[in-house]
Length: 114
Length: 112
Image 1 (cartoon, rainbow over the protein chains, first blue to last red):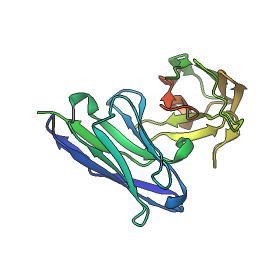
Image 2: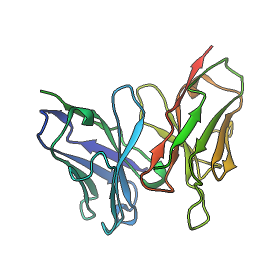
Image 3: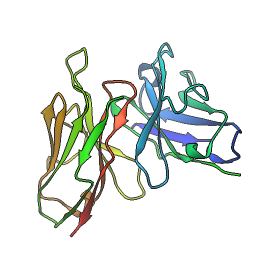
C-alpha cells in the first residue's frame, strides 16, 4: 500500500525557516518524481514544487521560487521542502503527492504568524 | 500558466441523481507523448484529495464505475451517475501536462 507521511509543520514567525519531510513507503520511491502541493485554509489546491526521480529536474511555482528548495534522499525514501523567508501567505496544509496527483499524504500544517 | 475553469462552483443534488462537472483549460493539455494529463480529484470533508480519474477517462484504483470522465484537448467533463452520500465533497480538475501544474477552483457537491 502506498503511504506518504508528511511532518515538520508548525507555527513559525514571518521571515523564519522551516523544513518539511515526506516519508514514502509501499512503492519504489527512487523510481518516481514527487511533488509538493499546498492548500491554504478554506481555499483550493496550489502546486508548489516538483522533483524528478534522480533530482535532475526541479520546478517551482513563481510564488515560492528563490525561497523554497525541494530535495530528496532516495536512500531514506524521503522528500523534503526547505522553506525560508516565510510569509503569512505561505500558511497552508502542505501535501506531498506522487506524479499525476495519484497519491497524497495527510498533509502537514504550516502557520506563519507573529 | 494554464488556467483551469471549472463549473459550476457548487451543485446541490439528491441521492441517486446524476451530475456533470465541466473543466476547460486555457490551452491544450496534450503532452508531447500524445497523452493528456487531465485528472479529477475528490476531497471529502476533512480528508486529503483522492484521485478518481486520470488521463481524462481512466478510473483510479477502487473507484466505482459510477464515475466517468470524457473530453479532449481543452474541454473535459466528469460525470457521476447515481450520486451516493459518500460522493459529497469538493471536486477538482488538475492538469499535470504543463508546468506549473494547475487546478480548477473546485466544485462543491452537496445534498439537496
